[in-house]
Image 1 (tube, rainbow, N blue to C red):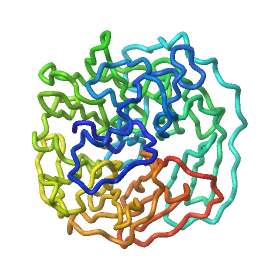
Image 2: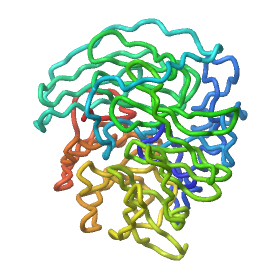
Image 3: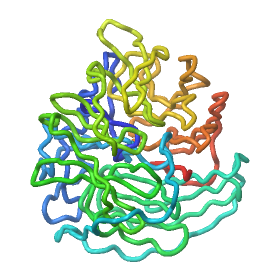
Image 4: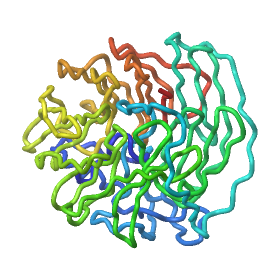
Length: 439
């Protein structure tokens, strides 16, 4: 999708986002971040002093060095930051049959020589007993300032692990593996692996200085594979060891000039758009999506599906909504919604019965709403969110029964996906930025 911010892509902070009641071309959805360099050094770097957060927050910033010469030069990889987008636990990631490391082809240790020195060690986990809702064996991870928090609902425990201060205020990919969580800024600054047990460690090797997209299972991510400034494909990296595996998603030569940054498809693979179409890159090849989707607004992604609003005319007050089934691209109509553009991409539930999407109200207040994929209707009330909400601020429980989201002021909200009933989780957390669920 041209310029879209997909669900489970690199997490992008969209500040002062303007919600416009006009048809949503996906290319318009990256306007806020189109000037941001793909690869700059962050606040402590030596190559480019531009801080990503300055530009995302609407402050002036000079143009920085780019790794890829995209036509739009936008940075958002969604998903799925962050973004995401995607982050682990954002509906639709099938699980690997084994938690053992995959066969590796190489261990990329070519971290940039200008990358900042390793950060100082931080203290170990702090465990608290908290009265959490009784929803079974769900483990929810939250990224807060300088810490990763794990909420173990079955044990009524909250485990907080301090993380060194990130040396960038730009987008962050936040994800969960079988043994911990990872925090990977898109800048050439340190990222961290936060194990359930043991000390926090800095990401090294292939993950030392790379933006990442969520992989097909909880242990892997994708990094770009390039020759000079030409994007050739995406290599799989096994997160616990930072080892590059033999799996490659090649970019088809027929794509022509690439129009926008790659993004997560919400199901563990990669969407990429060029002058000759949009493709879903998978191990069995590059699947071309229907051409009409180039001008649609992606509302949510996950579980091998994309939820899109098709808005052919600016006069329409409501636009048809369709499900696109990946990787083949089959389209089915599921209802209608407001004609909007410029929104973050939401998440489709693991059971594909509902989707959590972003919608404005009549006064322009942005909210998160539960959309029933069977009836095409909304369930329950809208949950207000701040205009600075980040990609990766919503995730489902593994069974699709519960939705966790970051509400206004960074509060942690839980919604019953069957009824739309909403409650706040009072776990004594500071402002929450991003969420992920261990499945």
